[in-house]
Image (cartoon, rainbow, N blue to C red):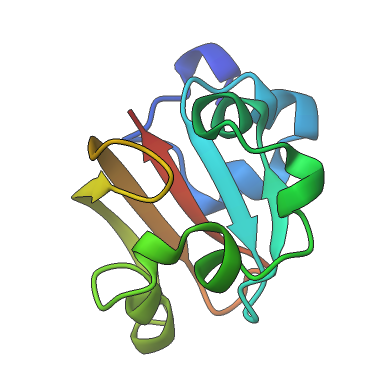
Length: 122
């Protein structure tokens, strides 16, 4: 799948894992990748621009506890705990550090993959 063909609905966990940082940065939606401990390992340029958060302040930080507390609930964070395999798109409203903003989140996880992902389409 080329970057031009990559759309929010179609991108998979395997696609994200095989992309370079530059390829992830070129995506038109936010990409946040984290390990099972929720510590952020991937934070693309689109998400940095849209959130206003510098990647250097996000990488190495627990995502749901310190970066996106508004997602630390049963609709997002708890699903990563309860469902070892995820590929789902959910409507959501971001509220932290901003006016309420309607988005779509894509939650991706698989037990055999090193990272889990939250994709954010504004």
